[in-house]
Image (cartoon, rainbow, N blue to C red; front, side, top):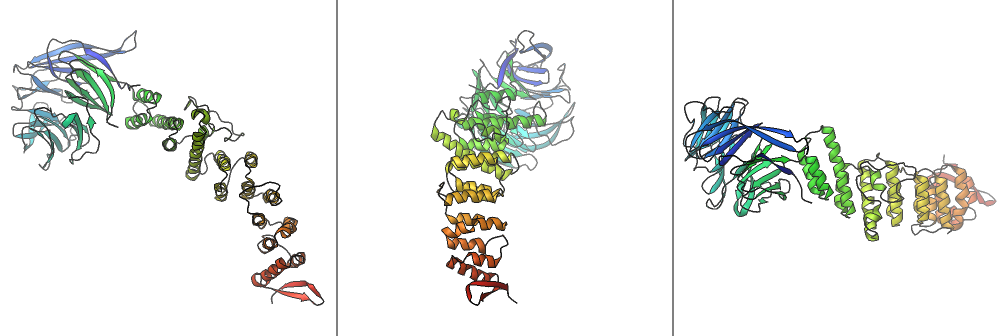
Length: 605
């Protein structure tokens, strides 16, 4: 589906003169002819009663014949001054913008090849217009007032063919060479040559200190005032008659077509048929195109409609870039930010459906997607206790991840890996957002993997999950060590010990289980002495060496004498505990005479 950025609407179906140039300001439209005539029209825009489309009507206000019998080559309005500048036969005239009377007795400047207005003027006076006039051997920077033109500066240069001015810089197309002049310092910097026989040197200001030039091989070249290019060139499909700029589009016109290129990615976006096209211009947001005897308007589609059309055709990169470059036009900043967030989220789901996971993750992160929108695509991951309704209007049309991947289980597993990575990223960046949903999903996904990553996750910090669901999920997937660790992290040591005891007894099995060591690692955290004694003999019977740790590393308060008595059946363990008393606890151990198996442990004096 092609992007529809503009509609073409007729303004003047046919005029009696041959149009050589045009200019517009608000509702005023000015046409210059090939025989020195200037015509002023008033343009009315309205909505058609039946079709609801925009239609134009025009009325002729005034007409002026400059009597040069030569073409009018340039027109430029100075609306604040109520004036129109007209160039014909090398003479620059100043006319009243309403009735087109000549201001003064004749041309204000003679021997003019071309002129342009400073689109980024260095003056705060709203009733002064800065312009640059190109003559045979120089350019002149002038100040236009209501009834006169004042010369400010003159710089020697070969005769310009075309030029544009921004601030202190004038980009000039001379005879076969482009250059940038700094009118403040008088310095000049050559850009690149062009074939003046085959190429008309179009020069168009695009942004602050940036210009678009017609280069070799039908290339539109972007250059800055510093003489460098910060954007890739545009490859025009054919030689163009004129070029204009309407953010974020470059509009070109030829004898048959109007072509719309994106400034964002330099690609062709739309083509409109327009027979005999010669002129295109952006006049403060009003786009006009003209052939020799007619004028039409390019009506821009609202950027929101353009974005929606791009999304429907899944051209998400273009849609996102267009939205981000359009700004909050016609809406509040809050509305614009909400629209952009929603757009980024939708773009993420489009990429997810195409298994382009890294791009999906980028869009989800930038759009701050509600993680539940993503989790509900993966059956079983969203906690049963969470009541969640998908966004309306929907962000996507996927039923679940299996349907989106068309049943391809390899891609489903890749999607789960992507989701796990994204959840871990979300947890790190925003640890408090939907914590139960995120942690529950991570535990379930890690359990399916059956790797040691789940144990590492459980050790990383506080866990907030749906415990009943995680218990069931870990049990179903044989992740009993992780289940014991989860109980332990959540502070339920008794249930953790119960699971570990079942593992020691081999009632259940888990490849991650290291044996009695895991049971003791949990038991030494217990502060209840009764619970310690409950498991002590169970551990000693299976591994006396690990059993010693129960008493030497425990957090519970135990009577050393009672421990020694309990260890009588385990000589090696008893000896280890004695070393602990003497070397670590610094206690004195007294063996009772006649009772070699009994002893007293007392603090050293």
